[in-house]
Length: 63
Image 1 (cartoon, rainbow, N blue to C red):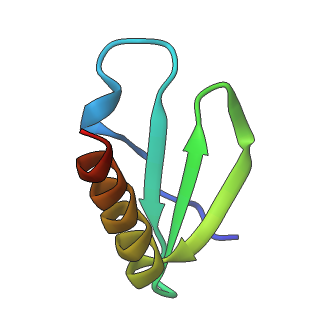
Image 2 (image 1 turned 180 degrees about the vertical axis):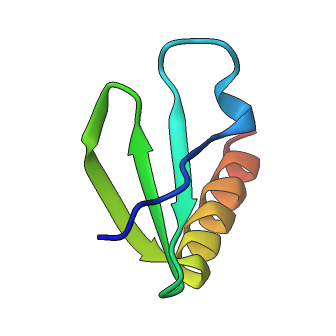
């Protein structure tokens, strides 16, 4: 895996439980948690978008 430029999510705040994201030149998106930096989830931008939209819809349904 190439060296990735990890960025902390703006939703993580100043706490110790942070989510980091990095994009690779191959068009994949990588996610990891500060508690487990070796555990990297890799997906595509389209799939991540679909996942986030589904989470938002579910949150609105439960409100």
